[in-house]
Structure formats: C-alpha cells, structure tokens
Image (cartoon, helix red, strand yellow):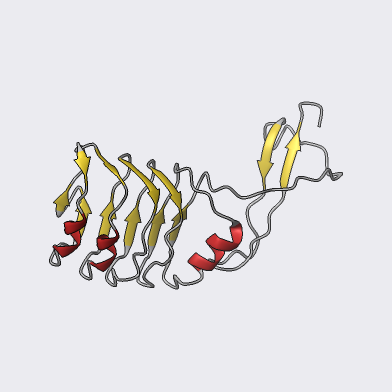
Length: 171
C-alpha cells in the first residue's frame, strides 16, 4: 500500500511500469499518478490497471518512447493534457472520467500511431431522438434492447457516425 512517490520520475532507465520493469501490480498503491512520470523518456509501457489511483492524469508528453498506456479500472477523473505521438495503445476504460467528445477527439488527434483505444465511462452528453425504422427481424438477431450499428468511415481523431436503435419486444 502507499503512493507512488514523485521521485519515481528520477528512474530514467525504467522502460516499463506495471507487471514488468518497475513491478507495482498487486501493491495496492493509491493516490494520484505523479507528474514526474511524464518525464521518463525511456518509458515504453505503463500497465496500472485495477489499481487505486485517482484524480486527474498528468501530461505524459515527455514519455517519448511510450507505446502502451493501460490505466483501466482506477479512479482517474480527467484525460491527460498531452500524450506522446508514439502511443499505439490507450486504455482508460472503467474510470470516472469527466471529458467531452471534443476533448477526447483533440487528444486522439495528436496520436497518429494509435491502434487501440478504450475509453468507457467518459461523460459525453448524448441526445436520443425517436426515428421510424425497419421492424426487427427475429430470424437475423434477437429483438428487444439496444443495438448500435458499426461506425461508418471511422478514423481516429475524426468524427464517426453510427445509429443507436432502441427496440422493444414488439419491434
């Protein structure tokens, strides 16, 4: 238990924080992620999923070798202000993030190599409007509940479009 000290950023040779390198998984660390982590230039991978970290995320733009950032299932409340363009995998799901779609879009637009993104529980307002649509075809899929079409022409950093359809058992 305890917190990750600010001095962690002085460990310039560390390339991984999590289950490899600086192994902190299973330690029950909590508190905020120190801003000094953002100055670890050799850091390639951060895996702090299912820990007890909380608060806003610091800028990690100084982690110029970082390719994978897995911070799922913590208590982080804000997106990081900046991430390095080297990032290919970003997992922030299951955090009480308070962000807009515009903030997420602006952040991901700076990540040209991003291949995987998971940001569940982002507070994005959504307006649902009733529209007439085709009846449910029970021979093709189960009727009732929520269905979302796959996004069309979706690229990271650009708007995507999809259709959210709410059905009852009679549709």
